Length: 402
Image: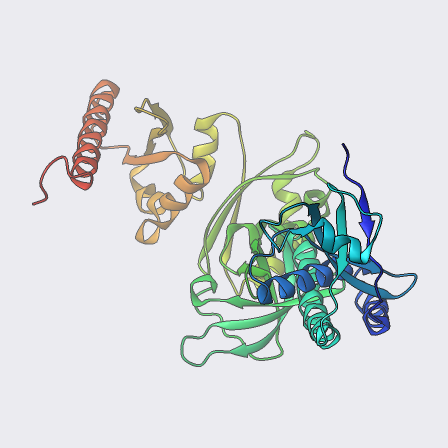
């Protein structure tokens, strides 16, 4: 037999202050009433359960916005013999409240202790404050999460004198938050002052206990890419594509560009008339050098361009085990130092840009046969695999540590 729900006669708790506060919040903070009502009812139930051990899920709150009342009920099954007084009520006791109640019915008994009004008011106030905080944090997260991998301009609000870390106030839409630019994400040699406007790259937006955490950087390669999107209309509209960026922040960047339109010069578009476009970006990056090269689907052509300004005689791919990609590049003797660059920077950036391990040789040097290079690479890979296996076995306790 289906259980009938029968409500016992009850009195109402005046809750006009609840709904007045909720209406004000909806107007001022744009937080829906339904969200706040849900939070308040959950908190009231939790508060009652804390003071009454044994209560399970049989407590409900009925919030009536039209009547501006909040009432709390405990639901009890009508039984002959009571085993659990928190969830059951005897037929005899139930009929004192409702003479027509039958066995198997569910009786809703209103909870009305003397201090319920005070507890409810305190709980509602705390929940409203907490609800505002959570809703605001949610809106901030929603707004800033759409800005991941984008460029934002922040205002420097504080500089930590101990480590140079910078706090910035960031705005996105009608939301704002504070972000932390650690020393590791700052360009070496840059100096900041309070009140300064600073462009930063949004690496990631995370949820945290104290609100959304926006991770920002001035050293990320994405910063250069976004600056070109701002400065070069052809990049913004897709006429010119930035295929790869390799960067050593504060010193030098290599960027590979390409256009699907054969009538468009992708390098010229990025450089701009008299170098105006690229110079604007170099100025924003405080003098960081930028090499712009043409991307090619031909690896040899692409690698040769990536090693500019050095001339390249030949590029030969070297088969490598696994997913690694390697090549041997031959350059004129007088171009060797230029191809390698100061402290190896040019070769290092070219390798990052292309994804190839680049072995640069002068023209006069005798070259090993490709077969020997392959054999050596395979031997090195096997040796590394053995070292990794030994380390894993040692970590798992399969062999004793030295």
